[in-house]
Image (cartoon, rainbow, N blue to C red; front, side, top):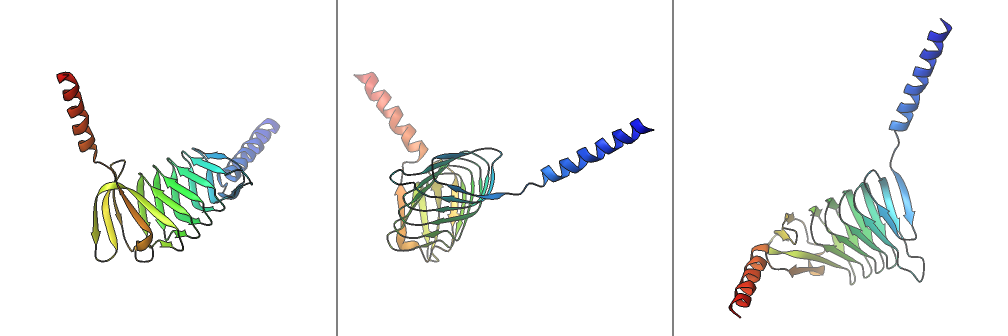
Amino acid sequence: MRITMKKTIIALLAVVILLIVSQVQAIDVDFYSDAIIGPGDDYELVFVYDTSPLHTKVEMFGGNVFGFITHDSSIVNIHGGELEKGITTYDSSKLSIYGGTILLDTPLLTGSSTLNIYGGDVRMGAPFADNSSTINIYGYDFSEFPAFSLTGYLSDGTPFEFMELTYAYSHINLVVIPEPATILFFCLGALLLRKRN
C-alpha cells in the first residue's frame, strides 16, 4: 500500500512539473552584443542595441519572434524562422530578410533605418517610413497598381504581393535582379563562346 501511494505521488508530481514546463511563455530579450536566434528559441519582443563603438549583429536562422525593435546602427539578418508581427527600426539600424515566414504588419521605419527584402514568405501591409528611411525590395517582374500595391518575385523566386504602401511609397526602392532563367541563358551563352575559342 505504501509503495503504491509513493508511486502515485511521484507520478502526480511528474505530471505537475510537465504541465508547468510546457506552459513556458515567450519572453522579451535585449541584445547588446552579437547573437544568434535558432530553432527552439521563442521571443516576444527582441530589442537590439549597439554597444559603442561596436555594431550589434543578430542572425536569425529559426525560432519564433513576435517583433523586432532595432536601435543605433545594429544589424538584424533573418534567414529562417517565423516573425509573427513586424518590426520597428530606429536610428541607422538595418534589418534584412533572406528567408523564413515573415509578417510585417505595419512596419515602422524611422531615422535613417533600412529594410532589405531579398526572399522568404513575406507579407507586408501598410508600412510607414519617415526621414531618410528606405525599404529595398530585391526581385523581378515588378508590377505596380494604382492603389499603391506591388506584386512580383523576390530574388529567391518567391512571389509576393505588398498592399497599402501609401505611407512608404516614396521610400521604396525596387532593385531589379535578373530572373533565374536569364542567368541560366547567359551562363549557357558564355559556355558556348568559350568552346568556340
